[in-house]
Image (cartoon, rainbow, N blue to C red; front, side, top):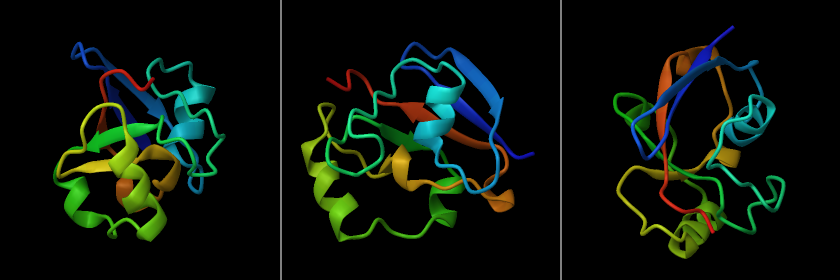
Length: 107
């Protein structure tokens, strides 16, 4: 099973198995990872699952669609070049080992 590394703002790391096809927001919730709120349940209407995708994985991902791109403008922590909504990152074998930094203060 592919793995994801969630990095807290403090630098603490949590490495967990994530089934192929599950988004990283649900995976964080299923593993009790603090900091990814996901108030809207993945409907892309709250931007409380903001993460920063580490390289080389960010370069491997498709660009955010128009809705995600717009929602990234409403995150509490200012948007950065590698900002994504974790509800829109779907785990695949190609993303095995992906590391995402959890954004500071989602609410």
